[in-house]
Image (cartoon, rainbow, N blue to C red; front, side, top):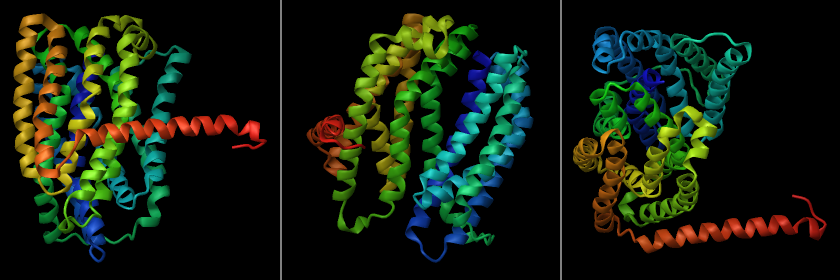
Length: 410
């Protein structure tokens, strides 16, 4: 599980960084342009393929050294090389995802990801039921097959947006890279930030089981973060349609309302998991990961305030302050590394989790005055939107319960 965690960190980091570089730029420019959509999409696809081929080359040259540096022997190197067919297919999957999102069609994206994950789950389930031994290489092969299947599904859902014209231009290649350059760096920093504790544990200790504990806690924490990721996917195409020459008041409203809604969902969920972490660890990851309970509790404390920072970074990217956001995130990453290392040396392997929550608090304290100065964000408005969301949920529950008494059906 420790080696599998390293594999996921490397591959997820690449895909997320590539998405930050290309998908966001693709969506922004398609939303602002009515006549150059095919040139934008073609240029984005070309860059997508070129970056993937560069990464594949680096895998052939450096995967062995990376595997050795992380103490994973040759197993991680083999897994990364077996993932190359999946990387090639992901060129098409991620392009179709960007095309669908630029048209605010989330049904296509949902269908692609759902089919991809269901097939992957069925492969694992078959091994479990039939009691067939499964290697990590088998899992990587199944991932590649699943991505291929998901790409076919998302194609059938999104083909109505495709014009089957390939006309990349140097003008749009430069603009995509120009907009995406700092975002590429921000995406890389954000992914390192999210995985830094696991990487430090893997590097500074010889215990792969502790890496697995951190990964198990991280996966459960990711369930709480899902609404934030979904919000970011919706915010980009929406903000790209706002005329910023009229001021930032619409952007401020969208940020305050989105964060309020996210907090009203993340805080109760995180509190429940914080109170009974061992139950969730045993249910989702397995009883053998009970040592991850404290790590999960630290992650849940961070999850309660993460939406404030995550959506702040997203908003600043979309209003054209990518350079500022890049340098601020770089500074926060340095703070995170320092705090993680100090807590690691002071408290041992669990110290990285403590350092992570302290880093999140520091990030909120730094981001909030910046939001106030640039967007006039008011925390009271965020609380108001959170309370309003609770009221709407409560009223809908009451209304649905009253339907049978009224002789009506939903």
